[in-house]
Image (cartoon, rainbow, N blue to C red; front, side, top):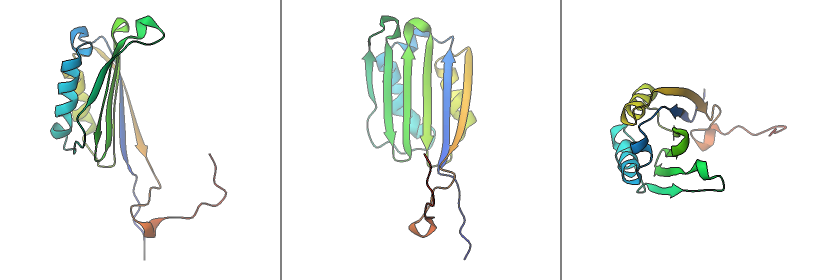
Length: 140
């Protein structure tokens, strides 16, 4: 019997600058965006977004941080208002249109420059217990 193995899923990471500062600093706007995005991209929201203002040890790093847990994994947002910058991630075990998500994010927040990173996670992830492969000489 041949096992068909596939990766766990895609991880889209966007490093964004040159944004609409009002939007990336507005807690309600970010909450609404994270609350609606899972439905827009075919994911299953299992929690309300958790969004809060952040002011840390470095005063100019203040911003909005938020996450929404989806059945497929998670979506995160971290802004740095004074630096006109935010990070955005979607990680999912369900394949999704990474181009469409990147477009939604960049258009919503009026991003002028984006560094886009994509990773394929869990290349040897077993989709069933029968697919598990014993580790021999495991490395970190």
